[in-house]
Length: 497
Image (cartoon, rainbow, N blue to C red; front, side):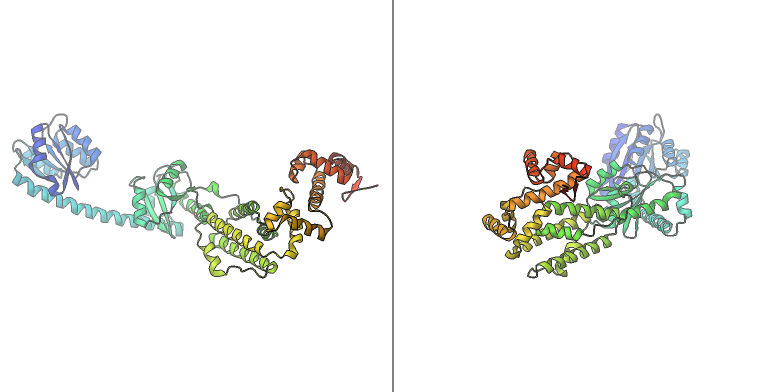
């Protein structure tokens, strides 16, 4: 709908123009009236109407001067001059200023209608032409930016537009999968008309001639379900290539920060090519065999940090996870030949169907926990004692008893106790104390822990009980043991007589 205003110092003329024809029928919306040229000019600044009917003589600012100022300030409003009497000199000046026409009062409906139809048609044609022109200019500017990113050479077009003009480069990833025009249209609500939107190498880059801080980007990202890669500072044209390269680095790590709305260079952890421990897979397998969810979560957190520190690509990260799963499967199969392990068709969707690192790790974790339950179904009764010993050596710090072992391995506590005593020659709780006291000796040698801290670290919440157990097994208190080691009275944990 086109917009029209009426500016005249006579109320009857203003209201008469509003009612003389059905403006909507001719494609116009009446957005207001003004009683003098100054107010009329303010209305043009505010609403930028397509058409204005203005009286030739008004207080403060006459119609011709008002139209001249509007044209001078770049407004594209079309003007029709109104006058109560015919004056050729005014009409001539109006035509020289590029006004559409000159109407005499009272307004003749038969004269007004064809004029309104003609102006409406002209406005629509100009809008189409302006749209095409803007589209062409947009493509021209977009092409200039792409060439800059590739060749690192600044074109005359960019030099003309951005010389001494600070701007920001950001990139936007859309979680709602809108098409390019939908995404552009949505962002246009937030930024000025000078903002450029460039699609390059499957990413949208936004060139903004204003300083938008991380907080505002966070609000936009949350409202519109976006992930924004921003540098949080304005730059000049000769810095553009360098900043584009920095944003490319951010693109490479988006897989690792799937839920983070705004990514900036500070999210890139200092590059350290760390390696996972060689026994990482072995530790994962132990978690599965002993159904240790808590420690499994810790290992996956370490794996996430490992990926982020090394800035691995999405492809590398997923390939590594496939290799790790294969190693786990091979190890499990060697110990439990009867277990049915998943094939590639089942595993690949877990990995390659994930949109970001956290999602992938959650999927794999759930998959491994399910596998853990299946592994424990196939425990051979002949291996039970060995499994109890292994578990105790790994998890001595937990609250262990025959009851917890029975729950873990799905056997009766009494049966496990008798079986353990028969095959090892000692009761399970004595074996547990032995393991814990040996660990306490190791910690005492480190000389960095208080006695009560060691007690808690090895699974004794009652410090007095730990003290008694330690003295019973070693013949001395923890502190005496530590001092004896310091004096050289103990070697390899034994008292030198």
